[in-house]
Image 1 (cartoon, rainbow, N blue to C red):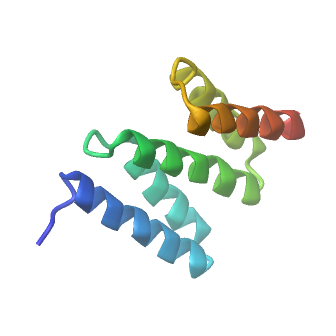
Image 2 (spheres, rainbow, N blue to C red; image 1 turned 90 degrees about the horizontal axis):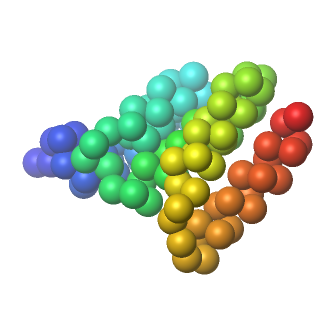
Length: 101
């Protein structure tokens, strides 16, 4: 058994977020992704992916301010990261922020 205090447990929790989203329980999915995105046992990729989902779900629920805040926080938190993934992430964030203005 794997608990939620390790990265494997956080990956399992992340999958529960997708299950909630698939079942159209977006408020619950948002809570799950937010928790995984902030959990210290979540690795960098899992934190980023979870926080992107928070912004996506907030926007889909009509909470544009929350979506904007999360995207701005992601932009600030990972501004010094390098590599193709983070370059693409920054472009995606900029495009989404422009759309939310």
